[in-house]
Structure formats: structure tokens, C-alpha cells
Amino acid sequence: MSPRKVSHRRRWFTPSRVIALGFLVIILLGGLLLSLPISSRDGSFTPFIESLMTATSATCVTGLVAYDTYTHWSLFGQMVILVLIQVGGLGFVTIAILINMLRGSKIGLRQRFLMQESVGLPQIAGILRATSFILRCAALFEGIGALLLATQFVPRYGLLRGVWFSIFHSISAFCNAGFDLMGRDVPYSSLTDFVANPLVNLTIMALIIIGGLGFAVWTDVYERRTRLHTYRLQTKLVLSTTAILLVFPFLFFLLYEFQLPQWMGMSIGDKIWASLFQSVTPRTAGFNTVDYATFSGTSLMLTIVLMLIGGSPGSTAGGVKTTTVAAIFLSIRSVLRRKPDTEAFGRRLDEEVLGRATVLVFLYLVLFLAGGAALSMLEAVPLNQALFECASAIGTVGLSLGLTPTLSAPSHLILTFLMYFGRVGGLTMIYALANPNETSPRRLPVERVIIG
Image (tube, rainbow, N blue to C red; front, side, top):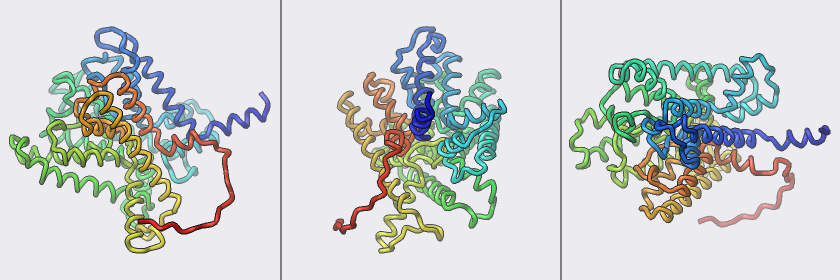
């Protein structure tokens, strides 16, 4: 092959395209494995569309399922799903670099750029050290989570099954996947049996929040510890926005939703735990300790908003991300105050960041609304139910009103695409489809346009 062709091929395989194609290959491989008889509990072939959707849901750490994970999939199938969750949560680039590091292979500059793009780190310097730190932290958090959950699951399910359940749910929670094995008791029940269990609630919530903060935030907090004023702007925005998105929904659910008649049978303690858990899990985790089908319309609307927002950049979570929402609100504040710049914590946000945030939110809203309308027409279901499932898919959440298992194959394909788009990322998808050689150095004259 001529040097020119090699150079052209390297230019074509941009980091965005490698990430998008890598996730696609893993999904297809996972779909093929799950369709095999060895993956199902009854030893029969699983239709490829449903297998593909399950593989996409696992790789894109969503949790929407066509079949109950415990009752349909065999131990082998559950292990395939867990591997897909782990690879999808940490990113296949991270796993690939880990394998090369263990083999002693040299990590080139191209691989380092790809790793930076994959996990959202601010700079390429020290990328291998940061990768090692991320992997060690992930193993530590998942290990501690599994040990804590084992204290509750082993007495209930026995030693072997209890240990397996503990490992599965710890990884699923940390990766914000939302897959569960509680169908052993009641299919599609998630964690509703543990609504009043403090240890299970706190462990799952902690894993979800830590996994959703983002790898760049981990490294920043670890390096600067309690010197809050020295944190990067991204870390400050992530932590402050996350705190707001946890406190406000908690108060709303506690003071409004769980005061409604359908929840009168719950004790005040149960309501507090349920409010806490439901304020955490919509931000891309997918577990639930109460039945969302009994939620009021207002609470479902708030849940949809939380699902679309999601977690933070470079994390195991999906959604438009906390920094995107923070940038848009800060921009709105600067316009209302007639300030020329968008500022936060003594820093000024780049105009390019604001433009990307606007584009990302627009893309998510268009696909969310279009997907909801398509599901509503195809399945003849209420639009609010269809929108809930689509928000769960594109936000890679996994919460459901019970609609997803009943959908037809075309609707499953719509949800599959939304999950893939939500995990890969809107901007990554755009950059993957764009021509990397298209540049336009010229700038046209400015002319004012009246807005509003």
C-alpha cells in the first residue's frame, strides 16, 4: 500500500469515527452472542432484533430491555451483558489501552489522542497515568459496592447467587446501566423490594453518582483534594450542577409526589428513601425502587427532564450532560444581565463551548420528540408514554413505564438507535459523519439580526 493511501486512511479514521465504529462493532458482536441458544435460559435462539437491542442497551449502559434479564437470559447471557456493560461504561478505548499496557505494547500518540477524546480529559499529557488511575478507581468502587451489597443479597439469595447478584448490580450501578437480576422474585421489578433498605439504597446511589461525575473530575478532586478554589472550572460546574439536580428533585418528590393519595401506604421513612433514590436514578442509572407507572404527570415530566440532562462529560453516564445545561443557563444569565461574556467562578466560557452546547441540546430534543412521535404512531400509545421511553433511551437511562417489552420490532430499532446516539454522543456522531478535511478559513461580514 502506498504511503499516500496509508496517510489517507489514517486521516479518515478520526477519533470520533473510531469511537462511533468501535461501539457499533461491540454492539453487533454482543447481539450475535445473545442471539445464540447458549445465551437464553430455555436454550432457544433469541430474535436478532431483540438481541441487538439488549446488546445496545448494555453497551450504551441504558437498561431498557425487551426481556427480563434474569428470567430470559442464561448465566452465559448475563455474563455477556455484564461484559458489555463494563466495556460500555469505561469505554472500549480504555479497555483496549489496558490490554496493550498489560501486554507491554507501546502506546503511540494516536492512541493517546483517542483516549483523551474517549474519556474527556483536558490534556494529553499524563494520559496513561490517568488511564491507570481510572481503572484502579473503577475496580475499587465496584469492589466495595459488591461487598456492601453482598451483606444484603447473600443472606437472601444464598452464597453463590448472592455473590453473583452483588457483582452484577455493583457494576451495573457504577456504569449507570440499570440492568438488574431481581426478576428472580418478580419480572421487571428492579429494586422495588428494597425501597426501605438503607444499605442497598445508599450503595446503589453512591455508585451511580460517582460513576456519573466523570473521569476528569475524579483526577481533579484526587489531585487537589480539599483545595476547592483550585479546582478546574469543569469540576466546579459538574459538582455544583450535580448538587442542584439532586437536592431539588428530592424535595419535589418528598413534598409533592409522595404526598399524593397513591403513596399513602408508605411510611415517612420509606418516602424519604424513595425520594432520594428517584432523584438520583433518572440521571442515566435506570434502577427504580417504586413503580413509575403510578407517578403523577408532573413527576413524570420532571423525570424526563432529568433523564435528558443525564450525568457529566467523560463519565459512565449519558444525556446532554451537566456542563451543557450549566453553560446554557449561564449564557441565559449573561444575556439577561446584558453582559458580553458568559462567566462562572471567576472564569469566562469560550463562545465555541456555548455553540456546541446549543447544538447538542437541539439535537437531543429533535430526536427525542421525533422518536416519541414515531413510537406513538407505530404503537398507538399515549404520546407521554412514548416520550418517556424515548427520553430513557436517548439519555441512556433505562427507566420504563412498562412499554418497551411490548413494542414491535420497528419501535425496538428506534430505541436502539436512540441509545446508540445517546452513548456515542451527538457531537461525536456529527464529527464522525463530517469530512475532517473541510476547513474554511474565511469569515464573512457581520450583520446584526433582531431577536425576539
